[in-house]
Image (cartoon, rainbow, N blue to C red):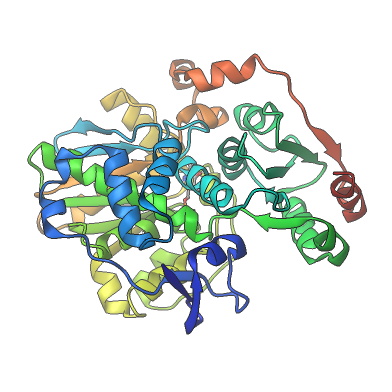
Length: 435
Ligand SMILES: *Cc1c(COP(=O)(O)O)cnc(C)c1O
């Protein structure tokens, strides 16, 4: 597999280089030089395959031998060891539940695959890989649980003290082994600044092999294509052909993976990006002007992004052809009030408790159906996290009804382990130096 930079199509690096660098030096993003087409026979019979089988087929096509088949199969079976069911909610409305992994969010797909790919390419006796992550909540849990026990890796997670939910904190602080959690007496921005400083520090880089695990890594994007194919397979089983995917979006990595799957031959009628009031992309699709803004805090805080980092990948997939993109991609934005209404209607009408991000996707599906000329399609909205991760947003009655999954019940029994730290870089540097 060869990859270029969205800023330089003449660049050509191999897959391990793209994985360990995360980002090319020119600050573009890595994209596959060749986007493979899956054969028609596979698409026509896809409903006969399981999620791991589909994942293997898609990954093999993308990776083009970068990992031998037996090894790739083992990595996939280990990484994608939980389900992604499509649940019928109403006539032609389906929810694709992506929260059945260890951290209860779709980021488990990316983080588990990435950690195993990195572990695979690390040779025995090679220097330990130090993964530094700043998190405002969801990413940290997925990365911590993804790398837990992966040989030759160590993860240091920084999160803002008192600013993540109880469950998110448990996911960060109860792992032990190769996972270290630091609660920073500051904001998420402070955490991010500390990580950035560490990457720029010569002394630390001389001593440790530092890498980031952020969402722009190509090895996080690839596994996110798997569940689009698998969702299509599940709907095909039920005789559905025309599928619309609605994706709650922040950094636009999830929907970029869907569009990549589409470019590989997945039959999709329409993609719909659903955002909160951080609406850089909806504004772009309406006006043709791409203007980033500082992010605004909302209930759907994993989507509080004013400058979506994966957007350049989407433009690249469509060769910057705005008109083509406006055809396949529609977009809707919602306020906190509308988000809450969505959560309440899902509960009262369908007895379904959805996290705020998921509720925004459901709202967007309803809006899209109103606007669509042809309403004969299966609408699939992606549920990106389990409701129990965002308990403070729910009205009391609904909150009491949220089922607590086994993963969380087990966490609550464990001892919290973390280091409290101020925002001075010297403190963080001293901590890393003591490794
Ligand atoms: C990260 C996240 C999103 C946004 O996904 P992007 O790939 O950044 O668009 C949506 N919902 C939840 C729950 C998330 O954790």
